[in-house]
Amino acid sequence: MQLDKFCQSCHMPKNADMFKAGTEKDGSLNGDYCSNCYDSGEFSMSDTIKTAKDMQEMVKQRLKKQGIGKVKRWFYTIGIPRLGRWKK
Ligand SMILES: [Zn+2]
View 1 (cartoon, rainbow, N blue to C red):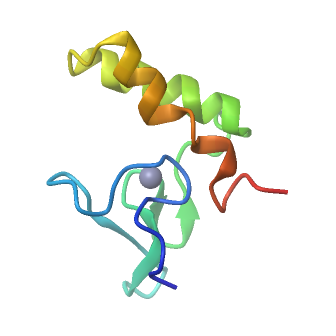
View 2 (cartoon, rainbow, N blue to C red):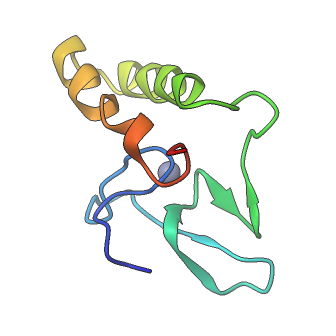
């Protein structure tokens, strides 16, 4: 499944320079998630990030450190609850 343009966990665009695909246990690439979210067949930080809201907060902090303004932080994270990982 490579139809979506964003990581289905953190909303990072797949065409971003820093985007790297996540990997499965056997080293093959996962089509849905980026390497920050999904590595060797497991979600990263799954003990602290359990909900879409947790993920939104984490991404906002990360963007803040990169000097991204508040409006853009909102824009980049608003779609997170609709992504594949969080959709119920
Ligand atoms: Zn991600």
